[in-house]
Length: 399
Image (cartoon, rainbow, N blue to C red; front, side):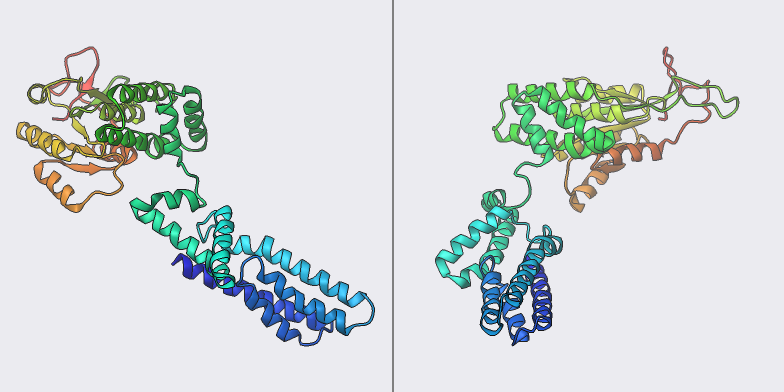
C-alpha cells in the first residue's frame, strides 16, 4: 500500500509538472513544448538527476533557436522556478510521511542502487527503501532496518522515559513526564507513557535483561515521580436532601496483585485517578497469602475488587484469584485490569469471565469508567445498617 500510494502520488505530481512545463514553454515560444513537457514528466521519475536532465533539452533548444539572451534566460528562469517549487513545496506537501523513510535513508538508498544498477536502480531506490522499512516494522528479526531507515524517532516517548529511568536520570525523566503532563491530562499520560514503562520493566525482568535491584530502582524512581504529580480532586459529595457536604463517605475498592511490584505501582496510579470523595482504594499488602485475602473478603466484603495483571503474563494467576474470590461471594464485582495489553484474545476474555470476573479492562481510563458506571456519584447515603463500617471513616460497602 505504501509503495502504491507513493508511485501514484509521484505520477500525479510529475504529470502536473509536465503539463505546467509544456504550457510555460509554449507561452515562451519554445518549439516542441509538448514533447519537452512529456519528457520532463517522465524523467522526473528518476530521483535527483532526472529533473535536471529533463531541463537541459528546452534550455538548449531555446539557446539554439532564439536570437539574443532574453528568451533563453526566461526559459532557464521558468524551468528553475517550476522545478524548485515542485521539489521544495509541492512534493513535501503531497508526500509528507507517505513513504515512512527518512530523507537521509532515501539519499543512501539512491546512491547505493545507482551504483549497483545505474538509472534503473535510481528509479527503484525509493520503493526498495519503503519495502525495507515495512519489513523492519513487521518482521522482528529485521527490526534494525526500521530503526535505521524509518522517519520515526528511534525511541518512542515511553521508551525514552524508560531509558531515563534505567539510567537513574531523575531530572531528565521528570522533564519528560512534566512535558507530557503539560500537553495531556494525567490519565492519558499514565496510560500512554507510564503504563508502557511498567510493561517494559516486567518484560525485561522476566527475560533476565533486568536484575531485581535494577527493577526495584526503576520502580522506586517511577513511584517518586508519580507522587509528585498534582491531580485535582473533585469537590465533596453533596447530600441530595440538605445540600450539606458529606466528606468521608466513600466506597471501598480492594486492589489486589498476585506477586508483582509492577502491579502495585499500577494500582497506585489508579488510586491517584480515583475520586477520593467516592472511592477508597485499599491495596493488599505485599506478601499477603491468598487464604488471608479470601478471609478478608469473607469477613468484611468490599464494594468491588480490582485484580491487576500487567502484561506479560498474569492471566493464569488472575483466573485463579477470580475463582477463589468468586467462591466467597457471588455478588462482588471483580474487574481484571490488564493495563498495557495491546489486544486481548477473545478466548482469554471468555476464560476470565468463566472464572468469575465481572469485566476486563486494558487502560486506567477504562477501569475508572467501569467502576464509576457500577457505582455512580453518591447523593444520599444511609447512616444505619450493617453496610457502614464501624470505623472513624464512614465507608460505604456494597457487598
